[in-house]
Every structure is written in structure tokens, then in C-alpha cells.
Image (cartoon, rainbow, N blue to C red):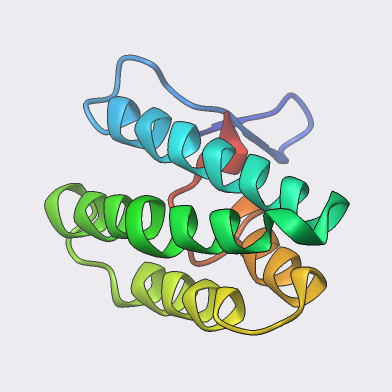
Length: 115
């Protein structure tokens, strides 16, 4: 998933020919839908119920299924998703956003940051 950069550093980059890439792209699509729901909640408190329901009942289960089917049921990914699930059940859009950001950078996630 990473290539060596000219000066010996690593440059994150998705290899589109790798068989796992389509699953990383699917995770990115779902993460974008979560991002939209969180931004709607942050910008309008009235959107909280819809955002919470969409993320908890539809989008996180899709990521759970993707993890189970194509990421070896990664315990690290499951912990990240569980943290987001707990944050979504709370009252703070900011806390939910912070939990979501763990999906958005290097760490225990689907690797979508490398796209």
C-alpha cells in the first residue's frame, strides 16, 4: 500500500491493482457518508436524530460487515468502529467527530487515508 519515496521516506499510496483496493475504496465511500452525517449534525442540532440513526443503524453495520468479510475481522478496526459507535450514542457532535477522525488518518482503520 505504500511506495518508497525518493529520499527513503514512505509515501502513502493506494495500489489500484491490489485485490484489497476495491474494499478500501468501499470503506472510503462509507466513511464519506458518515462524514456527511456528522457535518450535518454539527451544523444543525435538528439533524442529530437522523445522523445518529443513519450512522448507527446503516453505515457502521456496513463497515462492520466489510471488516468481517475483507479485513480479517481486524480487532483493531473493530475497536475503532466501537469507539465511534459509543461516541455516536453520546450527546456531543464534537466527540463523535473526534472518534470519526481515527478512521481518517494512519492507525487502526481501513487505510482510506492512503487514497
